[in-house]
Image (cartoon, rainbow over all chains, first blue to last red; front, side, top):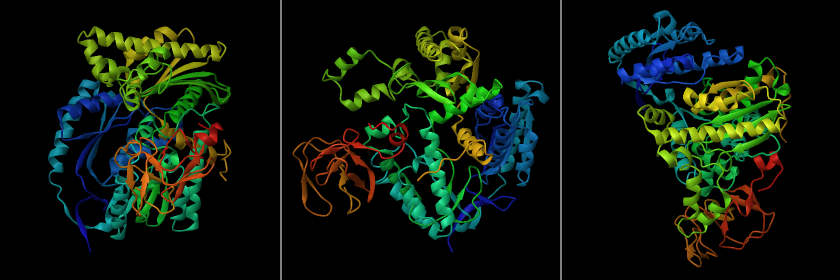
Length: 485
Length: 92
């Protein structure tokens, strides 16, 4: 029997790492978590944009997911940092983690008085836990207790020829030795699900795989009449991938050739070994925007169908969309038009662009790279990191300030143009995406568009929540499931 | 490189120039009808408009026009049968 060296946890599960985890229960506690991690570099800090929604189902899921992360056997002990007023209750997360028998400590900013006090306490607890964790030691453990999760990363045409098949061979070997291998990111199955379905160990698994992909495809196709969101990115295309089928066929190879024994939900533990599929999405701006639109409607006390919204997503890429009658009816996709974003050039003067393309100075790939990946803030300031840019502004960098203002100006124009689309009747403007964490950026946009409607800010990406909520709406009979034939 | 004998396209490993002759894995050669960048696909035999483009032994899309042998196969002459092509109803 083959073995590996692992840390046996009190609940019997085995990890290959011995982390002290610092985890906020809500986005407001992120700063404290980051400061603790700065002072105690041995910890693993995981920040996130969630933790406070008006949807009780979301709260329950978030509690479960946060507890799941902290319960992972790679974690020796966890420090949960709460604000105190959020809707995800830290005592519930802590209780679930405590069931594993591992040390879990809670730091509540409100109880300590303020973030400074909470940070001090957090640092002390972290140092103590790190010292304690050194007492854990590894033992020989049968490979049947090993769980390996597979992630995709920036596919090109070679991924399906080299990297993924190589990982697939490793998956086959591990499964053969009794381990569990988890394949996920359902959006990366589109076009290849018939192969995965054929690999199912039984009819039930087979139909679950097909249902999973059908639901995901339905969510993607409901993006309104334009269908602008490509399943493959400009980077994929430049690298030689032509269609989602080609990408998926290459992608699924990383799971290997053994039968798929189970399909589990997001954050659900596999109940058996072998190859397992977990329902998780790839990253999807479209889903995030729709999720944010629905959330905004809820915040306003309306149904999504009755609301009239403008949603601006500002991340590495970006987009601005108009929503009415429960659909997205118009859109700027920064990959090719509209405002420039962190690394996208957005819309450009057409004549100048044509002259650039035919100047003989650049290849097509080089020009595409200027537009996507190397455009926007990246091209002006050599960074796409909003925190770094804000740091520069605070140190007096006038150019950085000018560029950031220019970006907010362009987004504000795009947002305002959709007030025409919605005939001046706008219930709310939503700003979302990673850059929405910057209050400076948000204020600059607000100053130009708040005359149109109230501005709601939901920082970060919530597409994972979006998919989960979509399934729940079907389960609760709030929406019919679309049958895929 | 072609991975499956049912494939009608292969992947060019190193950027190939027009008229260059490539050795096929199963034996024989193929002359490139045009420049093809590394990682991109080339037809192993002529493909007719509407015919399925096959890679990994499965359909990755359909040809939007006739394609001769040794030609570049990519977003300009292949469209997906899934995803946004289905949902939007508009072919690229």
